[in-house]
Image (cartoon, rainbow, N blue to C red; front, side, top):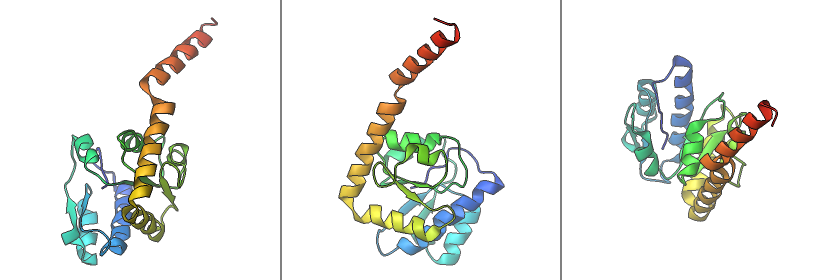
Length: 173
């Protein structure tokens, strides 16, 4: 699934189109995909003849409950900081497929704790989705390693410790 945590800007809509293009290639492999996306992406799914395979749920304020139900999480962004949505998915044990951009690659190590695809390459994205959906062992490994990454590098205890050290350093102690 793809979870969107806020309404989209026009530039962000294009990313969802890439996701729908990737979904077009995967049918026959898995029965159903749930996507939280835009009207434009829905129109594209209809044009591709895959609308019956995709549920467009719209903006959801309680995205985490939807995230827990996902077999995988896709972030088809062209630009991000450190994507909180990827951190949330990894922390919840949901395998991640993300684009090869700074921010995403700061979190996801391709093949270890997630899969990375080339930006704007929906064929590469589709291959990543299909590989994960067809390989339960890979999904389990990536999910486990993703959780470990988040807990080892971004746990609240570790972040508090880092802030404490930063403050001590700033005041010269």
